[in-house]
Image (cartoon, rainbow, N blue to C red):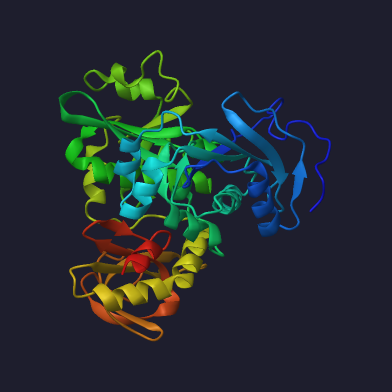
Amino acid sequence: MTDEADRPDPLGDDDFDGPPPSVVFGFWPDPEPPMEEEIRLALGAAFPEAKFVGDPDGDDAMMWAFGIQIPGLPNPVMVWLEQRGDLSAEAVEESLDDPVERSIAARAEWLVGVETYLGDDTAFGFQLQLRVLDTAIVPGLSAAFDDTALSIRSGKVIREIARSSTPPRSGVLFGIHESPVADGKVWVHTHGLSRFGLPEIEIIGVGKERGRDAFDLLDAVADVLVSGSGPTPDGLIALGEGIEVVLVAPGDAVARITDGESLRDANDDVHMGPSLAIVNVEGLPPEDVLLHFADSPVLFKGRAESSRQSRLALERYGIFGQLFAIHRKDGWRFHAKLRFEGTGTPPPREHLWFEVLELKPGQIRGTCLNAPIMTREIHQGETAWQDLNRLSDWNIVTPDGNYDPESAGVLLMES
């Protein structure tokens, strides 16, 4: 670790051409604010090759601020302290399930901010940013406010992501939010795709009963955009066999629903960034597409994301196995996604979901939930033993929600 270099504001965005900076905050759990030196020492110990850089230009809300260059991040990181401000306790309580995390975050009076430009490897950069945040909250991270994604996240989940050997999936880098509009319809939209240099995406005017499926559809479309696989010049995206959507300017979609103009107030600077709306191939709100999502579709995945997902699923398979042993008789459902190859050169890959019934070393016994399209090795509804080396993802359905390899570690802590 070296002394501070004489450098300008490390986050000065003059002449910067690319995604905006990524901004996250940690709730400081103690009533007394941390000293700057306390945070510097913690970061210096966790990142011994890091270099502190010139003091950044903060604003009046910051109690103190400093810059640090973390190895692996292309740009310096700004770390600062500010009072909590108008981040309401109600928002915290609605976002956190764990009562201990909820209580600590709700009464927190101070926030430690961490801001940086993530660079080309966005997911890896975000993971490093979360490691900085986790380290900076010296007494222990109870929760984080992701300002870019406008989401409050569990401290346990943040630690799981930060300490994993595999970068997080794209869905961790953005939030999905639902707002009511006229006639019982909802507006479901993202915040945080800007981290990838992408416009935000939204679905306008679908029924509230399809809200959960709309979340899944937005997640699937975002995955395609992040992978660089679409859309076509006319906005068409193929998500799976027979599942297609079109991206259009929000104004075109707004015109098709009652009172749609109220979605964007002239004074609303939160939702005024670049955005695209999802419609079906007829240009209408995609109610028909959402019906497909209720039937557990087989979605296309890029090879890079499939590989990352498989690595993480295998890395954390022990969590899945332990929770299966503890809760398989408690009404929880355990699903595994397995990889199969069809015929052709090169052979196409297909990923199918299974309801897991039994586990043994190196193998999973389950019932196939999807209708295979390319492979003849398995049929929908068939139950069989499968090798664990086929594993590409897993999911646990609990009374409190669904958990994947990214988040299921918190269940083990609670068991």
